[in-house]
Image (cartoon, rainbow, N blue to C red; front, side, top):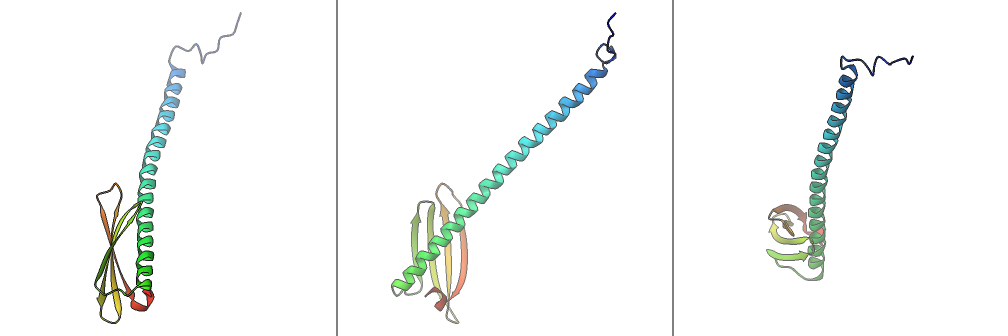
Length: 127
């Protein structure tokens, strides 16, 4: 006569109880991994957006600095630079103590937000 395993042929649902727990743990792990993936996507998109903004700022600063080096600029001075990633409006105003206030208004392509940065430079730093 064959020996029957009591775990498989037990009529009290002992095996089903463990299977349900394992399935629940697997579903919870999958749920939390998907939620973490969605959160990471949002964070990465925000970081890329800020990197593009910083890149636009650096390119506009470099062009404004070259413009000041190449020709005499009378203050206040305002110019707009168009780049593939967006547009930057640069405004320069004279301040006391031989300083220049430079205002950057950055608008990325495909976005309605305008980021404004202001920096104070010594006049000899820009030349």
